[in-house]
Image 1 (spheres, chains in turn brown, yellow):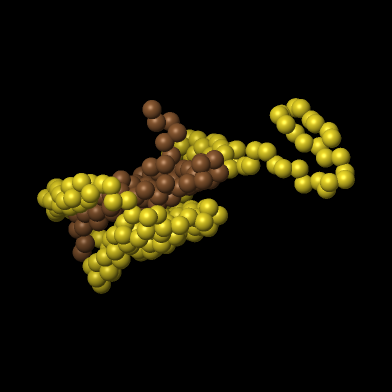
Image 2 (cartoon, each protein chain N blue to C red; image 1 turned 180 degrees about the vertical axis):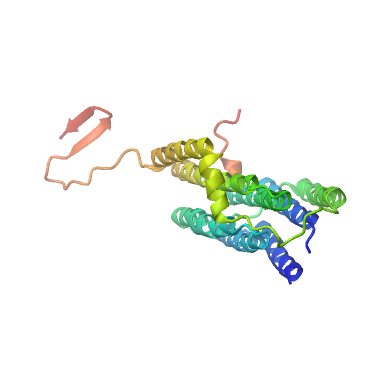
Length: 100
Length: 186
């Protein structure tokens, strides 16, 4: 039998690795992928709690998180394409047009 | 059996996530995320969430990651050269990350050590999920469809090319559009 804490620890590890990738990567697409990794870590803890509390609400929340992630991915990648068209770079350090 | 499956796929997920951090090329990061999602889908099946597991494969690994890979190919994203500027971040950041993980694990292991419900007893069936989605959560579901519509319009508006060069041949009088509403005929 697998305790709930194992799932939560795995979820925390995935979330922390996503945070690390978000901070240390300089490629805007990889930064975006790290955000998806964080969302996946949170989804795992939602499903684990849904199972352990015997409540379907956790699964519904995962469903909505996936929907929001899909919308976010489409809009975010469109923004990346638009930025690349204007600046011809994918490096986040070079996207400093709004910097004082 | 379940414990072995959990450990195999949990290790796979963590290895994929670490690989995502280590790899420099964006395409490798995207494919490692696909591996993580596949491993997580198996864990969802272990937790009895069959619908979420298959949606994870179909929507997340299927649709969203294809979008990522498509953009990576479209923009010809090369591996970024390593920036050696932030050596401080490397020296301090990795211990802080390890500390954060250890802190999380210690907290979760002590707080949820003896969870009362056992595994493999509760199946959240698709029927139950659909009933809850269309009865209790009907308003969020409809709001989500509006969100999707806005996302669709926004993606098209952002990614669409603004001014198209005229493709007419030289001899024919070409019509160019300088600003919206103003037509220039040569």
